[in-house]
Image (cartoon, rainbow over all chains, first blue to last red):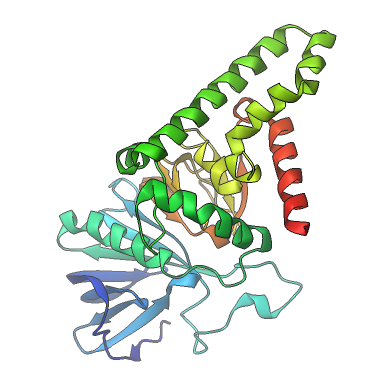
Length: 231
Length: 93
């Protein structure tokens, strides 16, 4: 039995608002209402003002589902780590140190009446997820990002908002310097890949000699440019 | 380091295993927090999570990923090992 709470809808930082959206939680249809994708949290409210809100750090995955054979309507699927069907909404399985993390999950579907809005709902959620990084994410990545940050900023030309690196987006957003860096990396990557294939065929001492060659190693290390700061 | 590593894997098929046992598909993109976007996914264990069968694209939060299974011929493990070792040494200094 899902407990809906009387919460006020978010008023600030709403990235996307989708009316006429049905929410289905763990197979239970909650009714038709409005989905708010806000920068602070994801929330949904039905006509009477009852609803629920999800914190982004607990949203494990979200996706657009379009295959009608598994579910009769196109919708936004959200996997939330935790259970909303109990009174204690903030209960996290991590309290028990013996149990595995994120075992209890809630699957939620948001079915908008307007199917064309699914893409923007998905994108808005991606953006908001990026605004809530994990606080206890490790160690080496944090320091690493401190060094890498300049390079990435130069390449992407972005401010504080982390952006996804894809094949297409990355290329179009690169500056001339970034493009040169990418070309260098791709060249080295291709070089190292082709050398792998060569070495696979020739299993003699020559293959180990290639690795011991200082120049070769340095060139290949360029594939992971951030590791070699003095490059 | 691993951000760069994953960037070099963009476009390749990987299997992402989440902490709650769900499994996914092809790496489309990655960001600096190691959140992952996958396109054209296949659910490897359909009985456990039938709801994902109809999903083609998904966004996975970095913190819910347990493993990323990589194609062996796409990765130069020697190189990765050396690079990781170097970075670990740099951070200690």
